[in-house]
Amino acid sequence: RDVFEKSYHQSQTPQDRVRLEQRELNEKLDALENFLDKGQPHFIDDEQWALLQEQHKYMDAYNDVLTKRTALF
Image 1: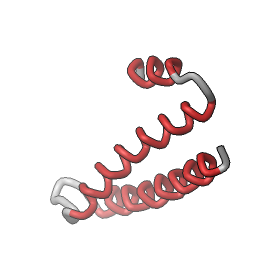
Image 2: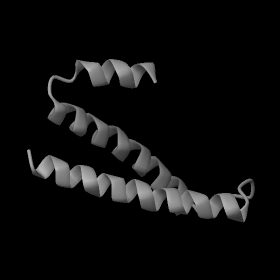
Image 3: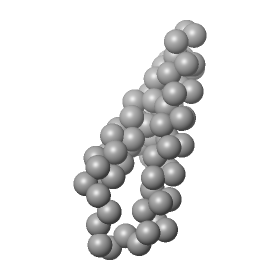
Image 4: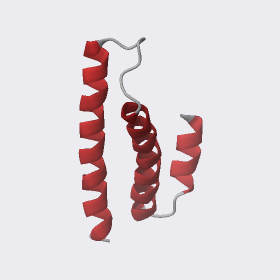
């Protein structure tokens, strides 16, 4: 969290903060997509796996919102 706080406060404008937020979200989204693409591992039960897929859906929607916001700058 400290790394985010330092990066967030170093941003000069609200637009910079949105771009930083999206960049960080994209890193997490890419990591989750790579994990999901490998298939369900034995140590994750069906309910957790379904929740990870749902999480991906919402993260992707969140990314779409940030994309629309940056297009308006």
